Figure 1 (tube, rainbow, N blue to C red):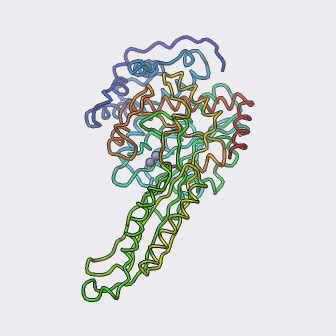
Figure 2 (tube, rainbow, N blue to C red; figure 1 turned 45 degrees about the horizontal axis):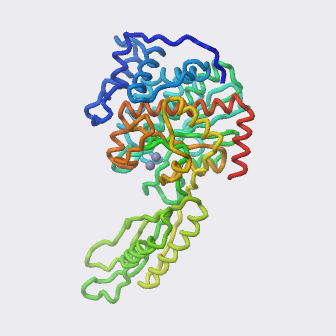
Figure 3 (cartoon, rainbow, N blue to C red; figure 1 turned 60 degrees about the horizontal axis):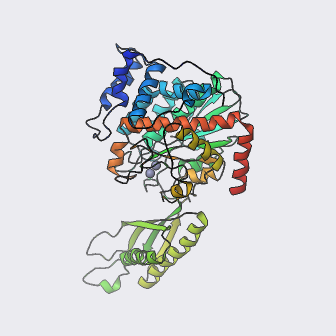
Length: 486
Ligand SMILES: [Zn+2]
Ligand SMILES: [Zn+2]
């Protein structure tokens, strides 16, 4: 990195009071009591020239530093003195108010996988306004997009944004933050590519339907997998993304998975007058559920099988002739998923045999585990450390079992990372009081602290991409490692 000295930016006092509403708030406040409304009002006002003064790089920079200092997470000199880092830093902070407005709007309008029409429109319109070439409804998916900026396709840095929500609990996975993290990272890279005339391109991939929610057919893959199969990532050198969480982890142990729809077919009869004439499909479903519970005792603690009975019969006085269940099978590596699949298949066929039912199994599209690229992870960690974070050891990070993501499949198709960043504090302390997919996490995903954490991680991700643009040897190491491990 270059270290040409530049003057420390001077804060404009007039803007500080306004930006306090954006970034300084009690992180324990409920979303109703924090100053979201004023943040949104400011962000909207600032883009339509009202009485409020426009944001300046200096004022935002000063405010963000104050928030970080207040939480004990201070910036190193790097972000002041390195001209590349400073460009990324200021470009992302300059867009902070707008990104905050986008994040809140996404949070207020949660949309399920493949139905993210409002999010698609909001993000693509914004990216176009910021000077990206935008391809809407890209690679066969109505709510996917690709936004591109740069001078040359010699090196292409990919970043992903997700923006789908969960049924009933909205943005409980914080994808509103993932959406703006991708945009922020792309804005940072665009700024530095343009300012220093770098021969590189940044591509932001808008990737729908990451969550498996049973709201679309089981044979339908996560958005990234469809985009991958349709060639979206051809010519892209690396692809990275971020995910908010209750811990900071650069080496997340995302599990590989497959999902199965289990249909039992029996024969209906009167449940009181002639139950002996029926073949009970609900018995088969319940036997399966019970036997999977028993199997857990003989499963390694790193494996997961979990499911629901979606259709259990029509009426209590009819022996059910049809039931439908859905199960997800997970393991740290995909070959272990294959072994576990065989075990659960035996349970389903056994339940069918013992009840006289027939069974139909429909497996979904597998998600692979995350193949974290160490060279990229090291860089990301370095830039997070330079913003006041201190990670536990790699082994400790890997010991934290997590969910699954279609980003896993991407990391087996090209080098990548998927760091998790804590949205609950900025100093690297795990918070076990709330996890992903809870209503409390959904509430946390709109706090100013979460926003600050998102932009901090985005700066680190942009710098990781920039390192690959500036250092051809590093990029080669990244690719060599990927070829060796995939
Ligand atoms: Zn999720
Ligand atoms: Zn998620």
